[in-house]
Length: 147
Image (cartoon, rainbow, N blue to C red; front, top):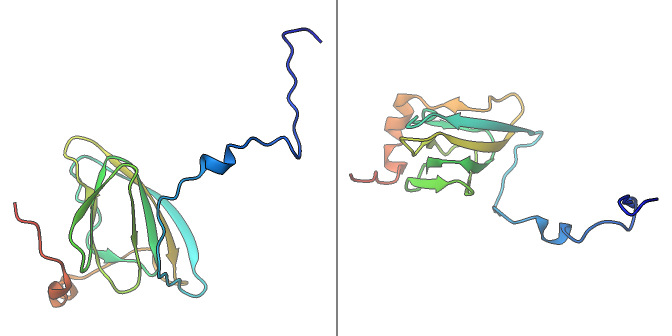
C-alpha cells in the first residue's frame, strides 16, 4: 500500500458521533388524535408568486408541514392569520376545523412546502368547504387583518 492509499473501516463500532447532534426538533404537537386505521401521505406543494393556495378545506386527520422555501400565509379556524417562513413548521388537527389559507405570502418568489397527513380510511385527503358552511361558521373565524 502506498502513502496515498487510504482505508475505510466499516461495520459495527465505526460510527461517527454526528448522530448525537444531527437531528433538530422542529415541531412537537399535543394532544393528537389519529383516525383509526389511518394512512400517511406526504406531499410536496409549490405555489407560484402570489398564489392564494387551496380554497377553504379540511383534512380527515392531522397534517404536519415544513416550509422549504418562501413563506406560507396560514390560517386555521379560530386562529389569526400568520406567515410561516422557510424553516418554519405548521400543523392542523384535522377533523372539523376549517383550514382557510395555505397560499404563497410572497408576490415575487415561489413558495415550497412539504406536508405529511394522516388520512382516515375511505376519506379524501382534502375536502373543500362549501360557501354555505363558511357563512354558517363565520363567527368561528379569527378577525381579519386590516390593511
